[in-house]
Length: 508
Image (cartoon, rainbow, N blue to C red; front, side, top):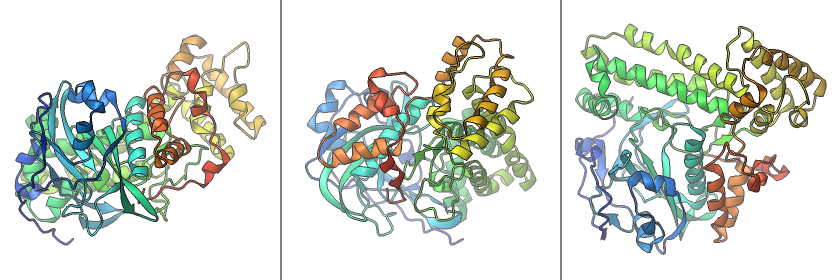
């Protein structure tokens, strides 16, 4: 590995300030040594227009509702003004991209405005698409309206689904041109997280052979987010174990919902076990275990089926980065390997529990795994719609009226499905819960609405014409994915034929 170059941070350029007394900044990351970031201000964009705002996320910061529609709000969250107390910076990190060491990366188009002490805790507030930084590597530092809409909607959709995730406050657009495959327009999405520290942040200081700064980073993460680990015999080994366990549980949730991240590089993995960096993501329509949602992923490294294995591999990369600190406290490579060897013991039961809940099985039986395997063989063979199948399955009854018509309508081989259905009904007989109670429980874990690619694309096409109403409507639907919402049935329909041609890539 080539050691990254560490440089001090320059002073921040000045921008007009907005005085919002309710925004109480703490900025703990900015108090770390200057080798962790570069201070710089966002690059302004002309004529900002608010595309959409999440009122729920605004409440996390304690923002006054009246401010959300003000011109000052758009000016601040596109980067033309700074809230008083902000201390904007671009963080440095490194990472393995598609399994290959990429060296120094860092926030190439994102700026951390600062950390706000909100009513529910501290939140780092980051502008994505705010202009070039020292880590842009020749790129323009901008985000386009298309990708900003996708990230905004999916961040909030994942939270509503119960998946640990960064949050999104707002999208603000500008007509300033941005050059991708075609000429597009600029936008900035404001995203929130307790922390944006990544596996790659640790890898950066490990590669630089700076154990002193690696220790500062680890102590910061433990002190801020895992204080209970400070009392462990080896806090850094304990940190590795906790991050591994959170990551395993996170990916189990992804798998249970048919979510594909698309670019699981180590620099896109959160040390808090959050879903971060929504780029070429996608939810499965027709089930295909080998589905690749990222058009740039030629080898299928980040396919749906590979996600658990890649997440585990990424944890081993984190373990390597932490080894100097683990060794300082008397730990060995064997100790780290033993911790990392617990991946399957954490991931396997988490996924099994999630899938059993999707089938409405409150009690565990030895043949449940075989029942699940047989089901996924059928889903794979007929490319059955993943979200709708499990939602409809809640209507199946042990006895009485069929309740399986909607499920059967999704499959091609009806006879094979009926054979599996007979096994499923026999298994339901062993459940103590009545059918109605089980159906309610299943609909609490099997969403009716997810951010399918065609839904996002429809909102994007309208937004390009200056109509942001569909983005806002879709947000409201996705904020309640488990509710029936009879007035929104069209958002739960099978994807149209034209959706099969949609592609997303790392430029998205």
